[in-house]
Each structure stands twice: as structure tokens, then as C-alpha cells.
Image 1 (spheres, helix red, strand yellow):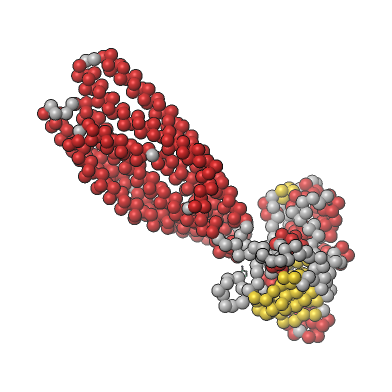
Image 2: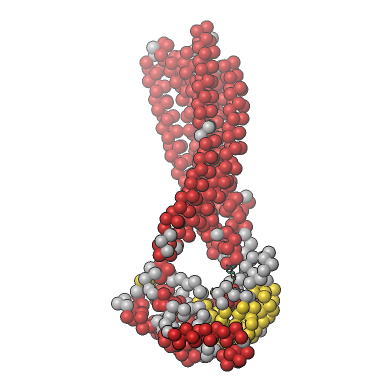
Length: 577
Ligand code: CTP
Ligand code: MG
């Protein structure tokens, strides 16, 4: 809870002013029935028209003061709630940005989206309502109870039975409803994940004609949410009938006993109307309190989910080491007895006992069947994940000892699943280097064999890419991603299957330009085709998370049976084609 104080601080005036202003409404609500009683008791009974007029004006002024207080209160409530939620949202977002891949895997994107939107809105709503009613509802309750006792103590005794009975009923409703709201929030999570997956992958879904399948999955999640929502609200709606029943029974009791007192002449007629109003106010304020409590209980569940995000320990941060200022100058890469798995408690390793060394400026190809751990291996170099045991060293220094920023700036990586962002081609390429001028950018594009097709677009580098880069072809997109990585002028360049959609002739051109312009850069190239890596200085063959051989093409052909098999099968295919 303490951590949320800082979100109140900038708006503390609103947090205080709102409840105070709302007290004017309480004052009015308590006074108006009393004025009314006077009008009846004195004005109407004695036919005193000027008195009635005078009291009428007093009532009007009271109502106007109430209105002003109400408007002011609502204004400050909005300021406080919206300000609080806005600041909180931006902090949660920042926290999520600092998450490691592993952290994000643990939450799921859909759940993070729900927490950033729905959960924070929930909290905002409660602040909005809660601030307005913080003093008002209890004030109204107390005021009405006091006035009722002043007016007619014996009649007011009825309240002593009604209030505890009602409080008990409301308490029970909340107790049952609370866990149901928690379940409901989880269902919203599930639905959001579903929606997010379906929308991001709408093209794939359509191409596999899986639309109706997805609709069914969505319908199931939606139905699930609907049912859990109904289950929660079924309890909540009980509130209203219980209240109405209590109200009617009490009013009846008051009119019954009060009526007899009026007939006996022990109670003025005007007091009876005022008294019934106070009774209604007491019950109303109880009901409002119940609603606020219920809303708050939902918000508490939401707040807990937000706290979970804020409390998450980012497992991959800059280590506090003495070599923070270490810089990568050459680009040698060494793996020493590296083991790795995606889930900490997983006994089955994705990579086990990997050791090899690459000198600066060398080109290394990595080959192996799908799922053997190629992507996992290279992800350890820019620390997208950390090793379980063993270490990755660049220029002889453990990657954990570099600042993350410097490390990732020095390692250019074209991910296997790559995306471009909405914006122009130039904007996308400048992700690699914000300050790159046109010439540098064109040089990078031409090294990646992208310059040709970019200039064939009517708007050239200003061509707008839609989200994810859907308006360029697969091979064009891959080349843009390579150019983007090249603009970083990295010491180490990693291409994870990044030319799979590029034709072999163009790919050969890219290789040629690399050996010219990237002589100093260490290049690690994952590929499916042996022709992509045949000319590399070393080729690493991977099998089930282990290295089964490393050497030049000729050496591997002579030594490594697996490599020979892959080579022969690919050559055969080529011959047939
Ligand atoms: N894996 C996982 N969790 C992830 C990614 C991968 O558990 N977030 C597992 C996969 O099931 C796979 C193994 O890790 O068995 C290795 O995956 P990866 O390194 O991605 O394999 P690649 O060799 O890159 O496969 P591909 O050629 O298909 O890209
Ligand atoms: Mg891969």
C-alpha cells in the first residue's frame, strides 16, 4: 500500500478537497427535511404564508449551496482519480518495458494488457466514487440518525434493529461476491489473451481458414466470462431487493407507530414526514456504503494484480560488477560449458555443455534440424536470456559484465521472427542508428541488397510501412531487417535464418557484400541451406542442444556424418530441381 502514496501526493489537494466539499451535500440533506417539517408544523398549520415563503427561500439557498458543493466535489474527484490512474499506468508500462523475455513469458501479453487497462480503470473508478462518498455516506448516515433521535427518540429506536440487520445482510453479500469478482478478472485476462492472439495472427488464421475454429474458441472464452460475471452479479443484485424490503418495512413501521403518536397528539404531523425522510436517508447511505465496499473489493483484486507486475523482479538486469565500463572492441565470442533451459525448474536442457570459440571478424555458420536449439544459442550472446550455467564471453569478458545497453548496441541481431513497425522505411532503418544520414542508410541498405527494391518504390525511403511490415514481401522484409541491424555497425552480427525468404542469387550477393564491408565484424549465420554457410570459416552442426561438430566445409564433410547427410540430401534436391 505504501508504494501507492506517491501517486496521491501530486494530487493531494484534490484528494482532500473533494470529500470536504461533499460534506455540504450532507448538511443540506440533513437540514432540508427539518425545514420541511417546520413549513408544515408552523406555516401550514397556522396558515402563515410569509413564513412559508421565507422558509422556501432558505431551502432554495441550501439547495444551491449543495449543488455547488456537489459540482466542486465531482470536479476534484475526477482530477484525483484520473491523475492517480494516469501516473500509475505510466509506471506499470515502464516496468513492463524493463521486463526480460523470461518475465514476459511468465505473465502472457494478454494479461499484461488487462492489467494496464481494465485493472487500472477499476482502481480509477473506485477512487472517483470513493472520494465523493468517503465522508458523505457516513456523514449522511450519522446526520440522519442524530436528527431522527432528536426529533423522536422512541420512534428512532426502530433504527437500532434495522441498521445491524441490514449491515449483516450486506456484509454477507460482499463476502460471497468478492471471490467471484476475482475469478471474473481472471476470465477477462483469458479473453484478452485470446483476442490478442487472434488479432495479431488474423492473416494466418484466414489463410488456414481457421476463422470458425477461432470464433468457437472466442465464444468459449466469452461465454466463460459471461457466466462468471453473472455468477458475481447475481449476488450483487440481491443488494437492491434486500434494501427495498428493509426500506418498505421500516417505513411501514414508522408510519404505523408514528401515525398513532400523531393521532394521540404527541407528535407534530410535519415531523412524521421529516422522520420518514431520515429513515430513507439512513437506509440509502447504508446501501451506498455497501456499493462502495463492493466496488472497492473489486479494485483491491485489481490493485493486487497491478502490484504483482510492479513487484516482479526483473531477472535480467545490469549486474553490479566492477567492469561496467568494459567495452567491446574486437568481437571474439566464446561459449564455455553453457547450459540453458527456458524454465528454471526444467530438468530437460535446451542447450547442454556448449563450448566453442570464434575469433573477431570470422564468419560462423550454424546448421541443425528444427528445434535443436540454434535460436536459443545465439539469444544468449546479447543476453535476451541468461545461461543456467557456464558463461558466454565477448572479448574475454563475461557478457553479464557489460552494461546491457552497450552489449545490445554492439551485437546486431536479426531475429528469426522479425517485425517492422508502422512508419516509413527510413524511420525503421534508423532504429539501428537514430542519427544516421541518408548516405549511411543507403550504404547499409545496399549491403543488405535492399537498396534496389527500395528505390523502385515511388516514394523510396519515405515509403510507408504498415504495421508489422505487411506491405512488403517476405524477402524484402528480411533484407530491411538486415539493413536495420547493419546500421548499428555492430561488432557482432547475428542472422537467425534471416535470408530464408531471399532467393539464392540475392543471398549470394549479400554474402559477397558482407565479406567486403563487414570484414571486421564477427558474423554468426544460422541457416537451413548449406549453401548459405558453405564458405564460412567455421560451421557448427547442432543436434538436440549439443554441438556435434565444428570446422570448415571440407573438414566437416570429412569428419561429421550428420553434416555429410544434410549436404548430400540438399545436393540431391538441387540436382532434381
Ligand atoms: N523452446 C522453449 N521455449 C521457447 C522457445 C523454444 O521451450 N520460448 C524449446 C523448443 O521447444 C525447442 C528448443 O527450445 O525444442 C529449441 O528451440 P530453438 O532454439 O528455437 O530451436 P531452433 O534450432 O532455432 O529451431 P528452428 O530451426 O525451427 O528455428
Ligand atoms: Mg530458430
